[in-house]
Length: 287
Ligand SMILES: NC(=O)c1ccc[n+]([C@@H]2O[C@H](COP(=O)([O-])OP(=O)(O)OC[C@H]3O[C@@H](n4cnc5c(N)ncnc54)[C@H](O)[C@@H]3O)[C@@H](O)[C@H]2O)c1
Image (cartoon, rainbow, N blue to C red; front, side):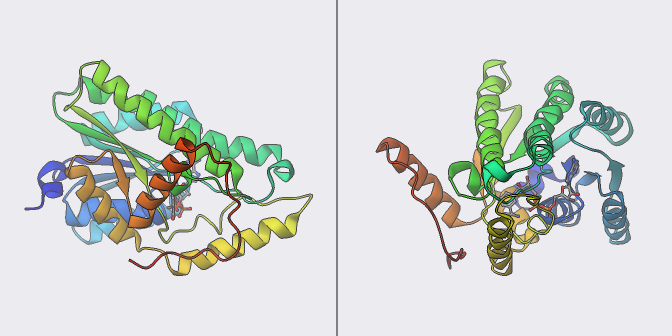
């Protein structure tokens, strides 16, 4: 039996944003390969209903729950329903996230506020709802927050997103310390997930720009969509994340170039270098 199956098998995984991309890949791997019961939470109720039916047809256990991570009450209801109707949470994945393209000064205020409320506030609401319950349970449990390679990088034309992923990474590092400070090291495990390029719907559904340099925003979307063609399969990413989590890593990284970006970030800061403008074609390095 793999280490991941030994640790996670038979437990309950709650995944926000489970209707597509990375969240759906995590749910499929958790349910089909590890034998977890998965709680699929998303605003896209059709997507999570279809995924639940797919998993149940394959003999797995799954529940779909409509949940908007912007709403603290929705996370509280999700946590209560999970614990009372499904079982104690072995793994919480605060995964739901959205992108936004365009110059920062062109970004509609509503898009900024929506992105922050999903990518940052959503993670906080998940932690507030689930952590007290996980800390109170005798069994070990895991919390994964979705940062990104963008959480250790600077890049133009997606500043709100990059900012949100730095925020999630910092929040997760602080949470890791707080769980230890509160005496729960080895009991509740906090881990930061940093995908590099994983095939998903995030660039198609990214927010746009209504005024200003619309062309720059859409050209950037096109460049990022080309990255999708070279991106990792979400099921492969899920396997990597579960294996690294089971090995006790804190930073769960999908591809080696994410670790290169972490090293580059550390070097930039250590040498007090100004951010270098990245331009042109984005490519996924061969491994
Ligand atoms: N795909 C990548 O290469 C990549 C890289 C780095 C980080 N990430 C991060 O991974 C996470 C998942 O992204 P993805 O690429 O799979 O995106 P995706 O667009 O394929 O899936 C995101 C899911 O979140 C759901 N969602 C959106 N708003 C929501 C809300 N308010 N409440 C609940 N659910 C909501 C969507 O309906 C969708 O099912 C995000 O946090 C993203 O920033 C992805």
